[in-house]
Image 1: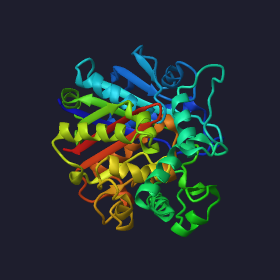
Image 2: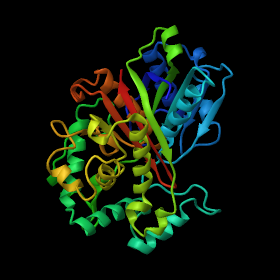
Image 3: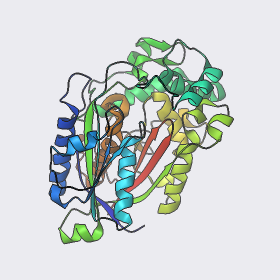
Amino acid sequence: MSNVYIVGVGMIPFAKPGKHAPYHEMAAVATRAALADAGVDYNQVQQAYVGYVYGDSTAGQRALYEVGMSGIPIVNVNNNCSTGSTALFLARQAVQSGAVECALALGFEHMNPGALGAVFADRPSPFDRFDSATEELVGNGDIPLALRYFGGAGKAHMDQYGTKLSTFAKIRAKASRHAANNPVALFRNVVSEEEVMAAPVMWPGVMTRLMACPPTCGAAAAIICSEAFAKAHNLDRSVRVKAQAMTTDTAATFEARDMREVVGFSMAKEAARRVYEQAGVGPQDIDVVELHDCFAHNELISYESLGLCPEGGAEKFVVDGDNTYGGAVVTNPSGGLLSKGHPLGATGLAQCTELVQQLRGTAEARQVQGARLALQHNLGLGGACVVTLYERV
């Protein structure tokens, strides 16, 4: 893989629905921050990939026209919760292929309160097969589908390995401790395992409210460039993309009759395998991870899909503290989706921002000392998973 560098990142503090600026203003602020961080003018950007899930067509243009109208190609991206990292994947491909020397990946989301729902009710849903599988495997039709997807995956782990509900509470409490040091996180209040367990019950024996990420609004961006461009403009070349892979569902998603597969376990496992193979490293070499913890349950099964622990070993991984500072690998130092928030289109680029700061050594109180390899995992149902490995040069 020819060298591709992340030379600039930027994001805005995440906010609850209704407590934020309009989407185009949020996106413009994040873009300007990434440009300033890189030391690049917008007129030097040759292509832009803009991700969002809930918005009208060409909202990416509306957002970037606030920054400049340079006539460059602007591609709008929608890949559910992996939208931001899909924009990053496309920008990285454009640079690595030689099509351009400098590209922008931008993600934003303007969400509404409450559970996610379909916008277009007059046509088949892209989730109809996922919904049917979930209905067949877990039932509980009175519970919102997103909770049943990921709660069902967690329950499958509980049923097979005896995983305790308190283990998911430990993950949520860890997220809050990390987010307390993150000035752009939505929730910075520390909650204990006991408080997570005592939160309102969403699914008896399976999930409390604090184990689910909140609807969030926000924006994040990254500037990606070639080595030649970085050298020519004297840009910071301390962080490069060492490997990256994107996968979608295979037949196993439905044929395995396992809710972990419905929410992308094998999709993530294969993306991680490709990344480790490309980079010539293993999960034991990773220092810091930002992974897709839309629910505490997904964080737990993602430890296993990414190879951070053996399959069936996630509860021990959590109980032993191997997922935090002083353990094997620091996971979600930003606070993750659970505490930082999850504005769908922005999430992948917020993860990128955190990991670039970690590798630069500028994460302040969140800093993972000596971090050299950072792994990012961003997953969207329907489905797509992007895994990216960054390296401190």
